[in-house]
Amino acid sequence: MTEILWNQTDRSRWDDAHAALGAALQQHWGYGDALRTPAVQVMRAEVCVDGRTVALAQFLCRRYAGLFGVALCTRGPLWLEPLAATDRARIYRALKRSLPLRRPRFILFSPDQTDAQDPGLSELTRVLTGYSTVMLDLAPPEAELRARLHPYWRNRLAAAERSGLTISEAGNSPDACRWVLEEELRQRQRKRFYALPVAFIDNYIAAHRDRSDAALILTAELQSQPVAAMLFLVHGSSATYQLGWSTQSGRTTNAHNLILWRALALLKERGISKLDLGGVNTRDLPGISRFKINTGGDVVTYAGGYL
Image (cartoon, rainbow, N blue to C red; front, side, top):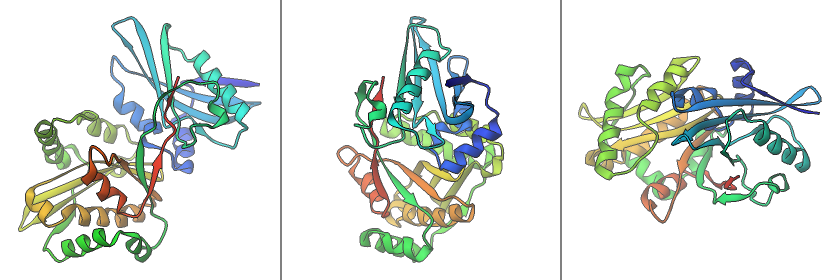
């Protein structure tokens, strides 16, 4: 028997399951809380089969123009145990049928898997192609991680290490990271690109059970002047690169290479086993994509979006 419990799961149980799986940022409890607004609801499902919990799924839901609702389950559900394809298909149906969002509505799943032909998705309709990211396994020792770097990336790192750059941790308080977020806002306006609201960072840190462990913000200085920064969000046993900026001096000295390299060591010290470097698009963003790919991580392309 399959039972869906909506908004009844204790956060500590959710966080423990999320950490054990090394699951994606978008299924972290704090991610949902950070995006919750009067217009955006967060729905969390616990899927039970014959009395045992087999899956968790977080949905972000909102209504458009009062006419229809949209619910997004990004990088989920979290499967807590192996299930047959027929069982997963049945659970997708049960989630869609029981979601407590007024009709008419559209329910979109973007599962955390790469096989678009997975039989478990056979009763859903694929409406979006999957995006690609770079995943870095942080378990190997430092020497092995360095050996995996592309020679060009490794040479730029070595140059940055000789450049006189100083790398420091900014801290997670609103005041400590404010200037980094302000630089990010200016960068978005200058380059005319859009992403999650900058306020999401503050909200995510505030929603974290341990605020000091919610994010890692590293800055690079040259002759006592900040020239670059990168911000990573921590979620359970994994982390995700969220944003970065650089001045011309930071680019000239390869500051991001050095910041990322230091970040890997600090995340390992925190017990983080996996780093998601974020989306790659070699057609539209070749430079940033090469930077991420040349770290030696695995390029992962997800299955896509399904209704």
